[in-house]
Length: 360
Image (cartoon, rainbow, N blue to C red; front, side, top):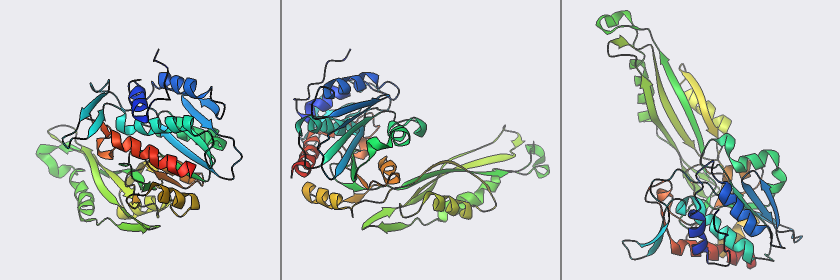
């Protein structure tokens, strides 16, 4: 059994403690137990458990509610636990190890503030959810949105995804498609009898190579789109002309475009080909025009908000009609990296930013 969490410790030490409770997707139970045990005795919070997701809410009767969420699972380990304090090349202190960036440092800040802020200026729902790093069907936040949407109700949401301690608004949408070509098998010594499906992928690749992705301004933030081949398959044997080939295409689209519009765009680009959509997730607009968001930006200070190019669970809040942003410690480039590490100053900075806003 893991040691009980000491939430009177600093958010830096809490980060280390929860990182050292291994919680690779599917194995979140021990950490969920520890979080529930730490929060359930607090009189100012109503605590609900759904699977390995923990939801803790203040019920102060405020006229506005904010949801602050983070996932407690990680990608698999690779000799990067237990965590260690180290010194970076620039002399700054970092906490190294699996989960420090994606995204237990953000969860640690949530835990620290959930304990400290007995009477925040808005009602707060703190969400710690499971299964973010695996299939969308298993995602704990998605499960709550489907089965317990009342637990996610709010006027504004913050997701603690790593953002370098800067505010990142919304996110791009994500589409994956399989574009297939077909031909006829034959012996390669008599190739004229067959019809080479791999050769037929050339126009698909040419379209992708010539494609000029858009930069789209959405609510003041510039989102860069991307359309790329991320895989190609085909072939039967070294002496057989293949009768089928497939190009795997990934499209990252600005949140001004709906999921349906993204699908239509791909089908138009590859008209005449067999196109199968294998993954589709709508983006999320920045949400920065909401009054609470503007107050949050002012309280945090620092650089102006920037767009989130990757897809994140802010889109789930957007689908529920709740404007949402990303704000968490850690540089996204270190997410899933074997050398995962977070500057401890960013953990403190995110805690300070949220604390200022929630107590102003």
